[in-house]
Amino acid sequence: MNTSVRNTGRLLGAALRMLLAMTVVTGVGYPLAVTAVAQAALPGRANGSLVEADGRVVGSELIGQTWNVKGTGRPDPRWFQPRPSNSGYDPLATGSSQLGASDPTLTRTVAAAKKAVAAFNGVPESAVPKDAVTGSASAVDPHISPAYAHIQVRRVAERNGLTTAQVEALVERHTEGRTAGFLGAPHVNVLRLNLALRDLATR
Image 1 (cartoon, rainbow, N blue to C red):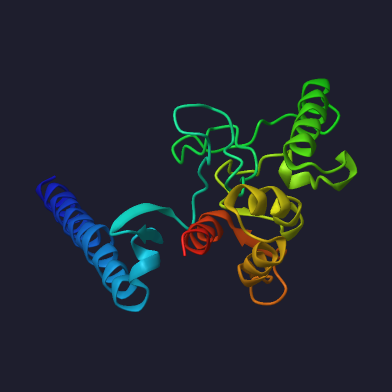
Image 2 (cartoon, helix red, strand yellow):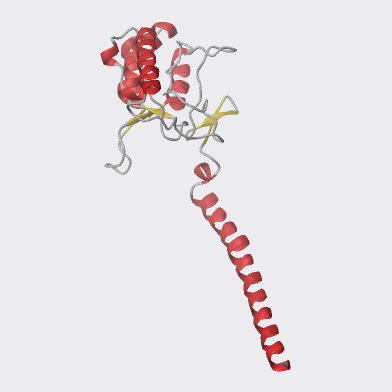
């Protein structure tokens, strides 16, 4: 009996020591090591890919945001607009609407959005790309397609006192290719594009 108790005690002691060691290694050591490597190799990305302008943080390259008329829910015609978001670009409430492609609610919403986007940009509904009227799976996508950026060029140019050629060139410079050359699709970061637009318009 005493031998059995001693063996059990030794096993429990070994288990507790292993638990403590693994807690230190995986719960403290590993996270600190990963953080140190990330901060040394890619500090900007490790800290959230924050974007600064005029000495203050204005957003993240990874999270979309609204570009509305101040104090309203109406899109500001001076700026390139992002794709719709079901969460209002809240990173704590990501996710799509979960509505199927044939859901009547979704089809009505998309039809109304297409009509609104076409009118807002002065283009026919047939020119409105799908990312202009549908949200991403995360609801915080910071990018739009080059096609959506291009249908906004004339409006943005007129509202900022620029030529369409100037704004078209701005879109081209901010169009990024496929990731690693084959993943995803070409895209434009709306925050970066609008900051460049602001700089161009205020020269």
